[in-house]
Image (cartoon, rainbow, N blue to C red; front, side, top):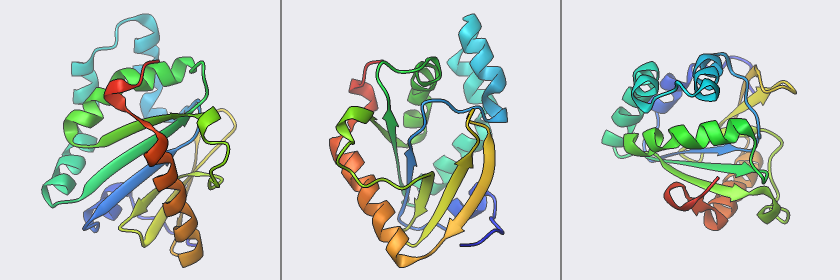
Length: 173
């Protein structure tokens, strides 16, 4: 495992076939979402403003998809969903519009899936970027892994979740 982790955009830029993201937390408290989440709770959040705030993200997604990279995101969530997950769900149409495929899996349907201990991005089935978080959801850094056994576990976990999960357009919160 490596402690010197390049920025996400750099990792995605080297990706050629697939980038898959497994999210398993019910609450995130990352700095970039504090303002939008507060706006959403206050009823002042708009998709247009969020699109502008995340324009860099949408740009790197569009560039990757334009190169033929398939981007899939699977989210495992508790039900009833948390307020944060309702917020995340409300903005996911923007991810889909950018070209990501997104699915949701209720946690109760994941009980028999061997899952990794942390959220992750898996690039081209050869490099994992684990995301570490504090108990309240703040980012606690990232870690790279290229261990074939760990990659096999994470790829299998993602595919199992993806197979059972509901496409964003059909998932109701």
